[in-house]
Every structure is written in structure tokens, then in C-alpha cells.
Amino acid sequence: MKPIGVAIVGCGGITLQNHLPGLALCPETHVVALCDNDAATLERARQQTGLKVTSTRYEEIVTREDVHAVIIATPNVTHGPVALAAIAAGKHVMCEKPLAMSRAEAQSMAEAAERAGVRHMTAFTYRFVPAMRYLDHLVKRGDLGQPYHYRSCRLQDWGSRSLGWRQVKKMAGSGELGDMLSHRIDFAHLLLGPMRKLVAQTRQFIEDRQGNRSDLEDWVAILAEFESGATGVLESSKLASGRNESWRSLDYVEINGSERSFVFTTGEWNKLQTGPAGGPGMETITIPQEFWRWPGSPRDPQQGDPLVTFRYDQAWEFIDAIRNQRECRPSFHDGARAQAVMESAHRSAELQAWVKL
Ligand SMILES: NC(=O)c1ccc[n+]([C@@H]2O[C@H](COP(=O)([O-])OP(=O)(O)OC[C@H]3O[C@@H](n4cnc5c(N)ncnc54)[C@H](O)[C@@H]3O)[C@@H](O)[C@H]2O)c1
Image 1 (spheres, rainbow, N blue to C red):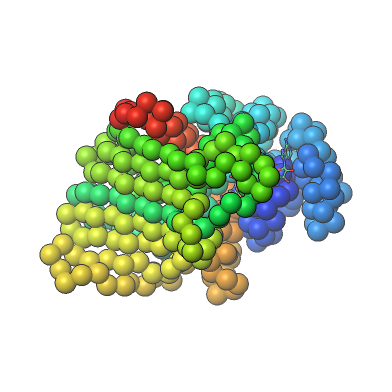
Image 2: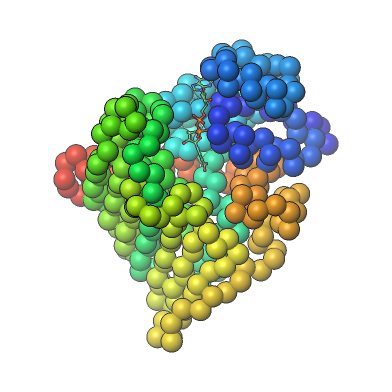
């Protein structure tokens, strides 16, 4: 097996939580270079990993010969420029969500990656929850019947604390919409296919976060119609007081079809609720063990906190797609499709009107 050299651009929270431990599980895969434009963060990551090759300039890192693949984990505004530089140097790229700042930028990233013949992946991490993978399998098998409704609800309590670059439009592009709802837009696409039209509303309640101005929404809701005719209702908030945060807070998806309904929550990684049409109500089913990790992943699902470790399969998917020269799931095309919905949601909220996709 030929070794794969990976460079990581952006050494903040998600790199330490997901990317480094995920890559460490992939055989013959070596992080060979790190980049962060903040010297102190870069030094912390250098000490933690023991890596010698570091730079504050991504241009120096993505062009190196020993780098075959690049992971981009920087604020959203830099995703496009870093990805295009890495693709131009012939590197495979996994980029954090939301993929870009606009639909046009996301599409140009997907087109550039296709033209260059490199693997491209969007880090929609929650697709890797075993229960979501099993739900996708059941829906594709036809268990839902005709799809009627998609419903998702992401409720967190972030209060008025500082969100750093996430609260600044020119760095993040959008607030709750790109930060949290983008994952649930991707779930909707995965389970029910493309949307046809939508109407959306956004709302900013907190304008000052610990002394710094925020110019982005804290809440978003979308009412959608899918090309299949199914309906969608999606809501996401940072201000659901008392709901806690991350995987200790509500991340709910329900789909209803002519045959039955399913309920997924991230917190219940190995369970789904389901009930047949006309039946007595919902029952809980356990996810079969073969779905507890991504196909081929070397991760032992019995090791560690399962609400954390499913995320490591994302790195496996990227590396396995590179080795087998196949499309990554989810790809830049999935990232661009979610970006189109996000852009339409912002336009709808501005126009106060339905928008076609
Ligand atoms: N997939 C997920 O579940 C998930 C979870 C959290 C964050 N994210 C995404 O990951 C990305 C990073 O988020 P985070 O929480 O790690 O943020 P963070 O602020 O903790 O880390 C970002 C890092 O990028 C560095 N940086 C900024 N500009 C740079 C540049 N031009 N070149 C090199 N480094 C640069 C910063 O110094 C910082 O260390 C965002 O796009 C975010 O939406 C995804």
C-alpha cells in the first residue's frame, strides 16, 4: 500500500477533534504538513503532533511534493481560495462545511476538482452517524414508501457568548444557516433528493456577543417543497435556552412516508424510531452492528465514546476514495447543492417570498 501524505490547513477546534484522530486510524496515511495563519495555534499543533513541516502560508504547504491530499479546516471565507490552490497543485481535497461563501464559488470548486481529476469531499460529518447511515439504507430500500414530509429541528443553547469569526458575515458568510442547518439540508438531500422551491426566514436576536458585534442570524427556518412533491420543514437555533450544546442538545430528523415514519436523533447513534402507517405508534429499533462503522473503516466501534468516534470514519472515507479512485461521499457536488439551498434561503428571507431552486 502506497503511503498517502496529508496536509491540514487550519489547526483549530475541528482539526484537533476530528481530523487528526480520524487520520491516525487510516493505515499508511501520514500528516506531513500543518498550516495555520495564527503562529501560536500553529506552534500548539506542532508540539502536539511533533511535525516538523509547518507554515503560516497555505500556498507553501499545498504545493509540496510529499503532500497528496489537503484537509481544509479554516473559517468559511478561506475555503474557496485554499481549495482552488490545492486543486491547481493536483491535490485531493476534503473541505469543511459550509463548502463556500456562495453557490457560484461552491460550483467553481466542484468544477475545478472534476477538471483536475482529484478526489473532492465536503465534511458533512453527521452523515457518518450509524443511525443516519441505516436510515438512508432503509429509505433507499423503499421502506418509507412515497415520501410525504421531511422535518428537522436543531436546537442549541449558545446564549450570547462570543462566537469568534462565526459571528462575522465577511468571515462566515452566514450564521446558523451555514453553521448548523447546512448538515440538515444535506440530510434532506440524502434522504429525499433535491428541493424544488422554498421560503425562509432568518432572525438575529443577539447583536453584541461579549463586546464584539455580530451581523449574522441566530435562528433560521425553511419551508420547502422537494422535486418528489414531498414537503420539508427545517428549523435551527442557537438560542433555545436550556437545550445545552453539541450532541447533548436536540438534533431531530423525522420523515413520514406512505408506508411508515422514521425518527433519527444524533444523540441516539445506534437507534431509530419507526412506526407503520395506521399502526399503534412508534417503536424503537436498534441499528444492526454492520452499520456501526463506515464500510471498510478500521475503527473499532466498541472503543471510545460512540458519539465522538463515528466522526473518525469521515477521514477513512476520504482516504479510501483516494486509494480506490472513486467519488467521495459526500462530495463537493453535495456541498454545492446545500450551498444553493442556503443562498436561496437568504434570498427568500430578503424578498419575503418563495424562491425556486
Ligand atoms: N463538520 C463539522 O461537524 C464541523 C464542526 C465544527 C466546525 N466545522 C467547520 O470547520 C471549519 C473550522 O472551524 P473550527 O471550529 O475548527 O474553527 P477554529 O476557529 O477553531 O479554527 C480555524 C483555524 O483556522 C485558522 N485560520 C484562519 N485563517 C487561516 C488561513 N488563511 N490560513 C490558515 N489558517 C487559517 C485559524 O487561526 C484557526 O486556528 C469551519 O468551516 C467550520 O464551519 C465543521
